[in-house]
Amino acid sequence: MSEIRVDLYSDTQTRPCPAMRRAMAEAPVGDEQRGEDPSVNRLCAEVADLLGKDDAVFLPSGTMCNEIAILVHCRPGDEVIADKTVHIIIAEAGGPAALAGALVRPLDGVHGVFSAAQVAEAVREESRHAPRSRLVSVEQTANFGGGTVWPRESIDAVAEAAREHGLALHMDGARLMNAVVASGVAARDWAAPFDSVWLDLSKGLGCPVGAVLAGSAAFIGEAWRWKHRLGGAMRQAGVLAAAGSYALANNIARLADDHANARRFAEGIAGLPGVAVDAARIDSNIVFFDVAESGRTARQLSEALAERGVRIGAMGRTLMRAVTHLHIARADVEEAAEALRATLRDGA
Image (cartoon, rainbow, N blue to C red; front, side, top):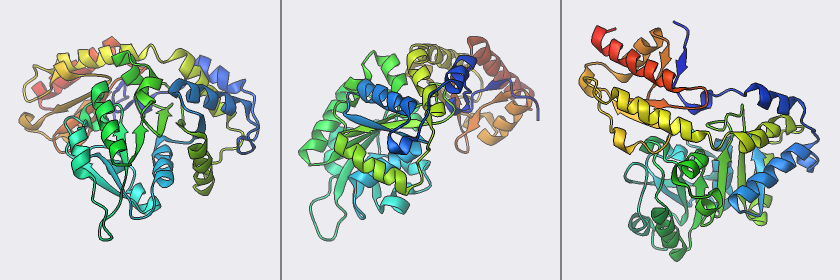
């Protein structure tokens, strides 16, 4: 295998920069379970303020944020309403069912975005025979929708429909700050309708690990109970939390560069034979493209690209995903586009 020079597999491939490492090394620490880690407390206060919520809790991963939110909002047999492409369905090992005993009712949204009418249609009538509709979950941005930024009016309409039916609202904010930068809408405004919302630190913000879940004081109190049950206590976690505080201060505005690079990559491959991509609808840092007409599978092309030093993920038989991040410059996406062009031309 050749050395990977351009890694577009995911924005989870980011590594802490020297300044972030210094912040981590110098972080004051304490027992975070006892509320005595000043760096963790600072990060949680920063995120709660950023999202306009009462309180927040630092967790090892976004997946744990989602699962704890579902555990707090739902009871066994309850149902979560979400788009069919969301992370809780396709990438959390069946966690809602295994941990909370909750079902997920998938909606057929457009690029990961569903409508208020779909929510209303999905809500089940009260019956001893049916699961209770309990929670609506929105993913912002919609990863497998192509990095789609939910329109503000769609969020507001879905929230209104959920409230009309007595449902709680949860936001998977894995890439919420990408939506903030792309739309100009503040994070607290995106988060306002939601009972719970979390922010990932280990993707575009460049931290090595971690996410922060926010909500009301009562919600976070219950979330802490589940954090303990699930083994999420991290003790002297300030060395990790300090990376998050650094990222919030330094790595948000630069997400615009990732979006520009994603559009540049999409434009660079749009005319290649056998490649189908809609460059006009790249909202953020994710580019999905289909290679069905190339005569090869996504996995075959992914492996061939790796031999040229470029990593792009295969997300299905013919679907590929490229994700830009803080280690990717314009020259890198141009190299990746040229590598794909050469691979298709040479047949290897």
